[in-house]
Image (cartoon, rainbow, N blue to C red; front, side):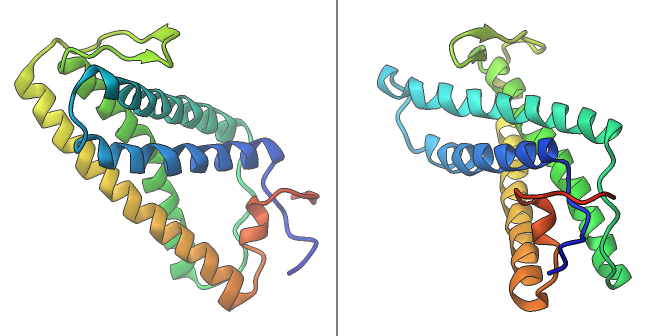
Length: 182
């Protein structure tokens, strides 16, 4: 791998890996929540899932604001189809990383379960309590979350392909270490 490859800014790297960590915890937790009884002893798991989801949303807003002011380094050379697939995947990842927690928050509010971020910050209730809306939003949340899971799998597979098969510098651009000029 070339030491002269332009890397992402360290703050962008931290936000990327923070998002990854949050998703790796929140998504599996959400996948098992519907198996748990809705009793007071399990409410902490629901609140943890909602707090993690809200954090993903806030981190993604911060990531978008950062990206707006600090563009990503230029793509590495490669086939046009790979650059186009990477751009589409990243756009869908960003959209889903915003949509999944947003729809989950709306579903929770519609179910009469306000979101209080880690028990500290109550978030506004933008929708009324409505059982039918709650059920519909939960279905959408689930479909979006599974779509996100598949897309994250594709993203990881592509990164591993670049590292293990292509032996190029794509993966190192989002790692920690020295950064070169763009």
